[in-house]
Amino acid sequence: RQLVSMGYEQNPYEECVFNRLSAEGVQCTVVVYVDDLMMTSTDKGMIDNDMAILKRKYKEITVHVGDIHSYLGMTFDFTIRGKVKITMGGYVDDMLKRYNVKGSTTSPATEQLFQIDEE
Image (cartoon, rainbow, N blue to C red):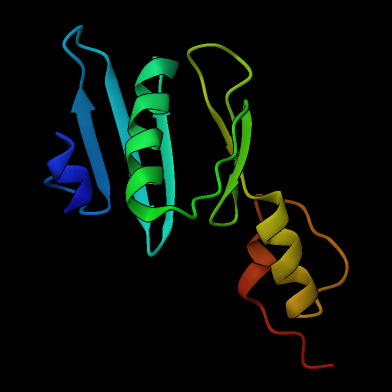
C-alpha cells in the first residue's frame, strides 16, 4: 500500500513489481520480496526522494548504493551504462555446498546423459 500511495502502480503481470513515472517520463521500478526491496531508476534523485519517504515511514531501513548489488541470491551489475548483468554465482556455490556436489561436466550434455551406469 505504501508504494501505491507514493504513485507506484503494481505490475499486472508480476505482483511484486511496482513502477512509477516521473513528470519527465523517467521510470522508477521497485521489486518487493517479503521485506526486501530493490529500487532502480536512471534518476538518482527519484530514488533518493522515494527512499527518504520510505525511511520516514519505516525508520530502520538499510540502503545499499552502488553499481553492484546482491538481491535474493542474484548479483546485479550496473557498471555498464544502460545494461545490467545478472549472475547467480553465489547461489550456485551455496547449492553445490549444500548438496555436496563435487566434480564438473561439460554442457551441452552428450547423448549418454540419461544412460544409467549400473556399477
